Length: 146
Image (cartoon, rainbow, N blue to C red):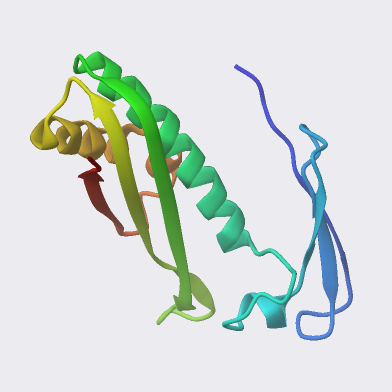
């Protein structure tokens, strides 16, 4: 299996510095990062480690869920997956990820709501990004759409 690479170039201190994170393996882009914008409610045109984790988690989860739907005898027509990753203070000092909420809405043939929710729960536990983030509480809101 391949190894994927990202690289960050950072200049300055935490509060006055900034950087650029490059998605090196895919070469799809370079994105600005800044701690003050990371900690603010509005991202202001920059990304953050939490947004990148959310992107990784939502895409990994969608892939894993599509596999488990097929394994259960269903056919995924469309999956809309959102990952909300929260940053907060760590009582031990500094910051930490305080929670991840996965929200998925699916259009699936061949599975009822219970079958879909079972596949969704299994995907939450088995997607490689979920496994990597076992120190963070992950909640799931899964439902079929008509």
